[in-house]
Image: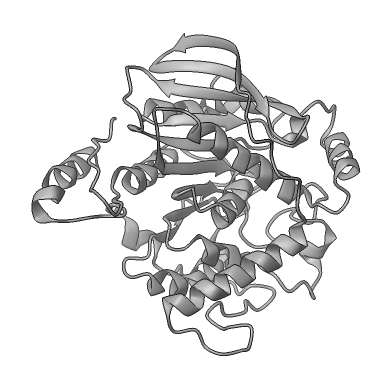
Length: 376
């Protein structure tokens, strides 16, 4: 993969190519419909239909409908106060690690609320706006950011550290469920006391967007090359972050559960009981449509304890493919089903890295094609 990326980057200016993303060699594989796909429990409403029930056939018409869907989802999720204008980022500790540095930082999230995260930087000097960045969102674990950042816990879950070693600036923010609370229930109650009409998922989205603010504040980060990665709980956050923040250009969601009935979306720290209500008018294929045309990969474990994605996830991606195709081919949307259960195997984590490198090392803007050699 590295060789192919470098050749493409070297040749693109001479061939006049302005790519928005490179292709992983296995793109067609993750876009092939699985055999014997179970239908969703609730029919998925077609995305290319306007509020008036008229078919959408142009990109301009879809973009209008996209704003309608975003507004409808925002009304359901609830709105938090505007974030503080300043991050007031403070480094609490710093250390050299294999391949780079790791800093524990504190910053302003909500007004009058300081939160923590780990900032991991690859070794070596970096010119301004020269490096891609990843917001890495941790899974459900009492270790929270310590595990994903490689501080403690099972090494196979050091995914933020692995992304840093692949050449990304990585920021790992702490989910609010582990912020100054003994239990998830206590953290949820504290949030609901502050914001009674705001879903827990809205709070997670708010905090993830604040994490994007953090990486964009770093002088070495290229604002055109910010991506996101998450497993389990973190994958749920990836879905919402990509859907509602266009500053994030690509993402990988591992085992978050696209279907509303796939995991505990009804939990009060996510969406609440509406998620299981048969009359609830929203569904997550809409969020996948909002992500288009940015590269989005869902990694699935199919079956076993805790498995959240699999063949049953395909209809949600398939429903969004027509939206992707309005932007032109290829549609960079796929389902990678390793079938090994909820944990993320190392080989598939490496494919996640490959996906993010392809998406964030090949791109252009209106003024120039940027040429960056992927490390690793």
